Image (tube, rainbow, N blue to C red; front, side, top):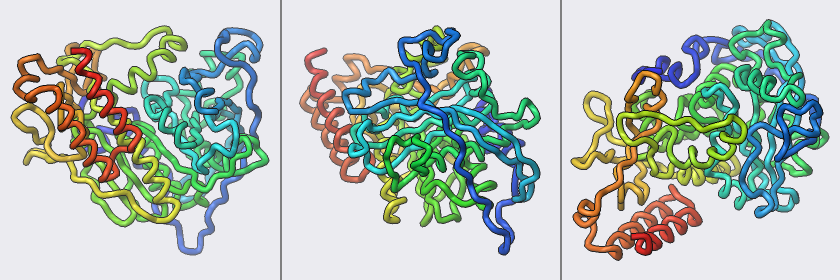
Length: 463
């Protein structure tokens, strides 16, 4: 996977083929062409079985869901349930259906056990499959915010790579899943209808998938490779079908230019800002760029560690040119973005504007003398740093190409800290100043800001 600076090459590097972005349907239907309705799929479940189980067991009751969360759902009054969703998906050409194919996949739901604990919004994540398996990239470190806010999170297994991995991982649980019609459909052409019909199932009380929750806003979210697929969905499929999502969050990846009633919110790490074309804010598009953050940073890695070791046997280790995994918490900005996206869908109020990261004349990230990116949303970990966090890195060997996504984290020495701050009180004061600014601007939630301030105050005891 090489670092490429044009859109198609970059998306291909992150797991979406260039051909995909040019395929499927025309962008605009004929004026007299009716929109294709999205049917309610068949839903089976919730499936039996749970952690700790045996994925290789012969009875489904003795297995458990792949990447079942390791978070304490009970503490927030949440449950995790898994369903089999099946229906008929289409292949499209120039906006017309050219063939129909059966599919069967899984949907993972984490929701308030009591419908009264719901905030009326669902975050429906297109599961990322760049690593060769389903990855709920946007649950991870945001789980606490999602649950304390009352969101329902839904993970949709829309693509063949993820579904194929599931069938091998636990044949008893997933052996019947297929999104290729026995190999007759290539390039994940059914994934778009799978994603649409998952939302339709969520909106339909008779399926039981929502556990009695009625949703005011159903929000589509996807990270990296999934954002690229959602871009195709938005630009090439959505003009021809009845809409089922109220707004779209494109995270660390490609995003469409809007031009539809459904809002587009693109949130980019520092890693991503040179990999994709500059996107301009408009009435229907908002773009945030966050200095110091990585496409795949420390917080997501730590949030996935236990599940990856349990379900995959290990968590990968990487030999990078610089110490990997930026610790600037991108997830905190994502938490705020979900709240803004919900409000945008509910009453039309767009998210706050944000200054972009500055670019050099050659299109790279402009930096100060210490190596920090200039401009962008600036978290307290960047404005009052104890380490150099960036969105850039390189592999130290050819087999570690994913290093380009991890950013860097280089802690300051005691001497550097002494030069930066007059003492611990000065450091805390600068953290508080940055936190106040970001909460006031709407870039960080009050709850996440409080945690940052508490962490800064606690550091004195560890020094």
